[in-house]
Length: 258
Image 1 (cartoon, one colour):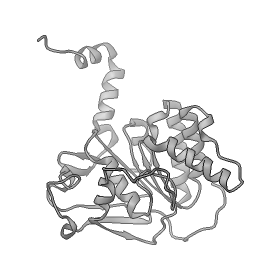
Image 2: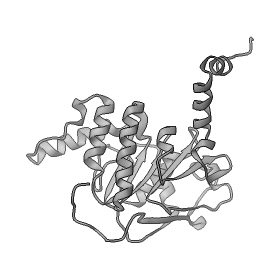
Image 3: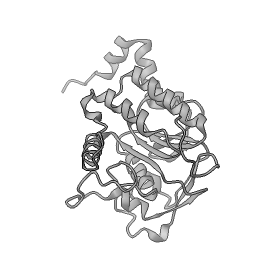
């Protein structure tokens, strides 16, 4: 990684734990408190490694949890860097991430909140924001949007994930081919080896789930639990498909006649 001014000599992870404060929850029946994560009206998540990966089906609360962690670190819900406001929230209805953060208490050692909150769904908005901010300051825009979707992602990661800090990545694989996902894995490995970067990532990619030295957690209807990547539904499905594509598709696409 490029040489940068160190914020601390202590190694990542910097965010050690988030803890639910039940007294701060007004209505347990309202989303996001109605998620299975909070069925017991208690929640504690410890970060014991530099890279933490969260997996689970759509709708289980992965992105909402990452939004909350981003809010606790001082990032806008739409993503970006500290102090960035890439999206106009004046008409926004969904505030679930910020609402979730309001019910948490977090422990840092030390509090290093420099870094980046990456969201695949808002990448274009953030990239335009960066271009406009650079032009207004008289500098050259980074111009991530002049590349293909996947190339833009990789260039973005290579440029923005080199400083000491905390990096929250929500489905970074969404525009990446398997080859580009390997490039991202290499970057994650360099970040982990540097000792200066904490990564908290949500993904559906079995390749990224296999990131060396990462701790993997699965969100399900039973809550949040550690899991081996080979025990995830994502890995098992891809394994079964690669083992016998024809049989897999015949079973997966079968529909009972009406």
